[in-house]
Image (cartoon, rainbow, N blue to C red):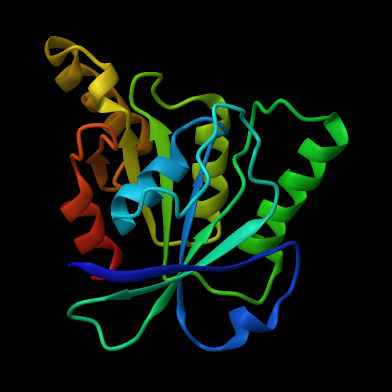
Amino acid sequence: MNITSAKFIKGITGPDESLDDGLDQIAFIGRSNVGKSSVINTLANQKDLARTSSFPGRTQEINLFLISAKGISSSFYLVDLPGYGFAKTSKDTQEQIQQLIYWYFFDSPYEQKKVVLIIDASVGVTNTDAEMLFSLKEANKDILVVANKIDKIKKTALAKQLKEIREAVGNYKVIPYSAEKKQGINELANEILK
Protein backbone atom coordinates (compact mmCIF):
# COMPACT_ATOMS: atom_id res chain seq x y z
CA MET A 1 0.00 0.00 0.00
CA ASN A 2 1.49 3.31 -1.09
CA ILE A 3 0.37 6.50 0.61
CA THR A 4 -0.05 9.04 -2.17
CA SER A 5 -0.89 12.08 -0.08
CA ALA A 6 -0.92 13.09 3.56
CA LYS A 7 -2.16 16.45 4.75
CA PHE A 8 -2.43 18.00 8.20
CA ILE A 9 -6.04 19.07 8.73
CA LYS A 10 -6.18 20.46 12.28
CA GLY A 11 -5.49 19.87 15.95
CA ILE A 12 -8.54 19.26 18.13
CA THR A 13 -9.18 19.16 21.88
CA GLY A 14 -12.76 17.90 21.85
CA PRO A 15 -15.68 17.00 19.56
CA ASP A 16 -15.13 18.20 16.01
CA GLU A 17 -17.22 18.09 12.83
CA SER A 18 -14.24 16.73 10.86
CA LEU A 19 -14.59 13.43 12.70
CA ASP A 20 -18.28 13.21 11.85
CA ASP A 21 -17.73 12.84 8.10
CA GLY A 22 -17.71 9.04 8.06
CA LEU A 23 -14.05 8.52 7.10
CA ASP A 24 -12.17 5.72 8.85
CA GLN A 25 -9.98 6.76 11.78
CA ILE A 26 -6.64 5.04 12.43
CA ALA A 27 -5.34 6.22 15.81
CA PHE A 28 -1.66 6.33 16.81
CA ILE A 29 -0.83 6.34 20.51
CA GLY A 30 2.32 5.83 22.57
CA ARG A 31 4.39 7.13 25.45
CA SER A 32 5.93 10.59 25.18
CA ASN A 33 9.28 10.30 23.41
CA VAL A 34 8.51 6.90 21.84
CA GLY A 35 9.13 8.24 18.31
CA LYS A 36 5.47 8.38 17.28
CA SER A 37 5.96 11.40 14.99
CA SER A 38 8.89 9.68 13.26
CA VAL A 39 6.77 6.56 12.65
CA ILE A 40 3.99 8.70 11.15
CA ASN A 41 6.42 10.68 8.98
CA THR A 42 8.13 7.57 7.56
CA LEU A 43 4.77 5.87 6.99
CA ALA A 44 3.50 8.91 5.07
CA ASN A 45 6.90 9.38 3.39
CA GLN A 46 7.01 13.02 4.48
CA LYS A 47 9.77 14.51 6.61
CA ASP A 48 7.78 17.07 8.56
CA LEU A 49 4.18 15.91 8.50
CA ALA A 50 4.07 15.24 12.25
CA ARG A 51 6.29 17.51 14.34
CA THR A 52 9.15 15.57 15.85
CA SER A 53 10.76 16.88 19.00
CA SER A 54 13.33 15.86 21.55
CA PHE A 55 11.04 17.62 24.03
CA PRO A 56 8.60 15.00 25.39
CA GLY A 57 5.01 16.17 25.52
CA ARG A 58 5.19 18.46 22.47
CA THR A 59 1.86 17.22 21.06
CA GLN A 60 -0.88 18.50 23.37
CA GLU A 61 -3.89 18.08 21.12
CA ILE A 62 -5.23 15.40 18.80
CA ASN A 63 -3.79 16.00 15.34
CA LEU A 64 -5.76 14.89 12.29
CA PHE A 65 -4.03 14.00 9.03
CA LEU A 66 -6.01 13.19 5.88
CA ILE A 67 -4.40 10.25 4.09
CA SER A 68 -4.98 8.96 0.56
CA ALA A 69 -3.39 5.78 -0.71
CA LYS A 70 -3.18 3.63 -3.83
CA GLY A 71 -5.52 0.66 -3.73
CA ILE A 72 -8.15 2.15 -1.41
CA SER A 73 -11.24 3.96 -2.63
CA SER A 74 -11.65 6.34 0.28
CA SER A 75 -9.28 8.58 2.22
CA PHE A 76 -8.94 8.10 5.97
CA TYR A 77 -7.83 10.05 9.02
CA LEU A 78 -4.58 9.24 10.72
CA VAL A 79 -5.28 10.42 14.25
CA ASP A 80 -2.13 11.35 16.16
CA LEU A 81 -2.81 11.44 19.90
CA PRO A 82 -0.59 13.14 22.48
CA GLY A 83 1.97 10.93 24.21
CA TYR A 84 1.13 9.56 27.65
CA GLY A 85 3.42 9.16 30.64
CA PHE A 86 6.55 11.24 31.17
CA ALA A 87 6.45 14.72 29.67
CA LYS A 88 8.25 17.97 30.42
CA THR A 89 5.02 19.80 31.11
CA SER A 90 3.13 20.90 34.20
CA LYS A 91 1.04 18.44 36.20
CA ASP A 92 -2.12 20.24 35.01
CA THR A 93 -1.11 19.90 31.36
CA GLN A 94 -0.29 16.20 31.82
CA GLU A 95 -3.71 15.72 33.42
CA GLN A 96 -5.43 17.49 30.50
CA ILE A 97 -3.53 15.32 28.00
CA GLN A 98 -4.56 12.16 29.87
CA GLN A 99 -8.20 13.28 29.90
CA LEU A 100 -8.08 14.09 26.17
CA ILE A 101 -6.70 10.62 25.31
CA TYR A 102 -9.31 8.86 27.46
CA TRP A 103 -12.12 11.03 26.11
CA TYR A 104 -11.25 10.18 22.48
CA PHE A 105 -10.91 6.43 23.02
CA PHE A 106 -13.50 5.71 25.68
CA ASP A 107 -16.04 8.54 26.06
CA SER A 108 -16.37 10.12 22.61
CA PRO A 109 -18.81 8.85 19.95
CA TYR A 110 -15.92 8.21 17.55
CA GLU A 111 -14.96 4.70 16.44
CA GLN A 112 -11.41 3.81 15.46
CA LYS A 113 -10.89 1.32 12.63
CA LYS A 114 -7.58 0.45 14.25
CA VAL A 115 -5.44 1.64 17.15
CA VAL A 116 -1.67 1.54 16.61
CA LEU A 117 0.08 1.32 19.98
CA ILE A 118 3.74 2.32 19.63
CA ILE A 119 6.19 1.08 22.20
CA ASP A 120 9.93 1.63 22.48
CA ALA A 121 11.52 -1.71 21.53
CA SER A 122 14.73 -0.85 23.35
CA VAL A 123 12.83 -0.18 26.61
CA GLY A 124 10.15 -2.86 26.30
CA VAL A 125 6.57 -2.69 27.56
CA THR A 126 6.44 -0.22 30.46
CA ASN A 127 3.72 -0.07 33.13
CA THR A 128 2.05 2.84 31.35
CA ASP A 129 2.14 0.89 28.04
CA ALA A 130 0.56 -2.11 29.78
CA GLU A 131 -2.16 0.10 31.33
CA MET A 132 -2.96 1.66 27.95
CA LEU A 133 -3.05 -1.75 26.27
CA PHE A 134 -5.36 -3.11 28.99
CA SER A 135 -7.76 -0.13 28.68
CA LEU A 136 -7.88 -0.45 24.88
CA LYS A 137 -8.41 -4.21 25.13
CA GLU A 138 -11.25 -3.75 27.66
CA ALA A 139 -12.91 -1.36 25.19
CA ASN A 140 -12.60 -3.99 22.40
CA LYS A 141 -10.37 -1.86 20.20
CA ASP A 142 -8.65 -3.41 17.18
CA ILE A 143 -5.03 -3.05 18.34
CA LEU A 144 -1.77 -3.29 16.44
CA VAL A 145 1.54 -2.97 18.29
CA VAL A 146 4.58 -1.29 16.73
CA ALA A 147 7.93 -2.00 18.42
CA ASN A 148 9.78 1.16 17.38
CA LYS A 149 13.51 1.97 17.54
CA ILE A 150 14.74 -1.58 16.81
CA ASP A 151 17.87 0.08 15.39
CA LYS A 152 18.82 0.99 18.97
CA ILE A 153 19.10 -2.70 19.94
CA LYS A 154 22.16 -4.85 19.21
CA LYS A 155 21.37 -7.50 16.58
CA THR A 156 22.26 -10.26 19.03
CA ALA A 157 19.72 -8.98 21.59
CA LEU A 158 16.90 -8.10 19.18
CA ALA A 159 15.21 -11.52 18.95
CA LYS A 160 15.12 -11.87 22.75
CA GLN A 161 13.75 -8.34 23.20
CA LEU A 162 11.02 -8.87 20.58
CA LYS A 163 10.08 -12.20 22.19
CA GLU A 164 9.65 -10.45 25.56
CA ILE A 165 7.51 -7.73 23.96
CA ARG A 166 5.32 -10.34 22.21
CA GLU A 167 4.85 -12.21 25.49
CA ALA A 168 3.93 -8.95 27.25
CA VAL A 169 1.27 -7.92 24.70
CA GLY A 170 -0.29 -11.34 24.21
CA ASN A 171 -2.09 -12.15 20.97
CA TYR A 172 -1.68 -8.77 19.31
CA LYS A 173 0.46 -8.52 16.19
CA VAL A 174 3.83 -6.84 16.83
CA ILE A 175 5.60 -5.08 13.96
CA PRO A 176 9.34 -4.43 14.51
CA TYR A 177 9.96 -0.88 13.25
CA SER A 178 12.79 1.54 12.67
CA ALA A 179 12.05 5.03 11.35
CA GLU A 180 15.82 5.56 11.21
CA LYS A 181 16.49 2.50 9.02
CA LYS A 182 13.11 2.57 7.25
CA GLN A 183 12.19 -0.92 8.47
CA GLY A 184 8.63 -2.14 8.96
CA ILE A 185 6.98 0.59 6.87
CA ASN A 186 5.31 -1.67 4.28
CA GLU A 187 4.11 -4.15 6.88
CA LEU A 188 2.58 -1.37 8.97
CA ALA A 189 0.96 0.25 5.93
CA ASN A 190 -0.55 -3.06 4.83
CA GLU A 191 -1.88 -3.88 8.31
CA ILE A 192 -3.49 -0.46 8.73
CA LEU A 193 -5.67 -0.87 5.68
CA LYS A 194 -6.60 -4.54 5.90
